[in-house]
Length: 171
Image (cartoon, rainbow, N blue to C red):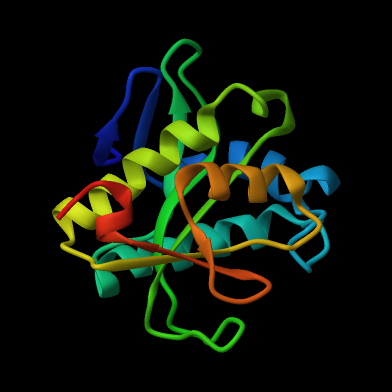
């Protein structure tokens, strides 16, 4: 049974489990979803299963990792969202917490990325007592960049954005 981490009005954010591989593979093999990530869409479900194992390791080692996002209305896994501790350097940043999200295209433009991101940021600032959370997005990814700006992230450089606790309305 997957541990539920957060519930919002329309979503359940819970730990990813091996049984999520089928729905997660729909995400990972989709060229639209993978367009700005710098990696090719997955061609084998085994890659998705490995990714889920890696995320589950993050839960154990770091106490946090991306969460499955389940739409309450349909009870379907529609993507993932949440915080990740960056153990490997990304754009010059390492050992920091980073917000990310990814959704199946049929669930884009419904406010789910914003809703899950707000819940994840609140969790990071309130439950993990973080002072800073980073995010990064390809500069050409207008949809994701719009969400990050709307959330209040401020550019630190061309691809890294920064959110500080005070700017999110928490002290």
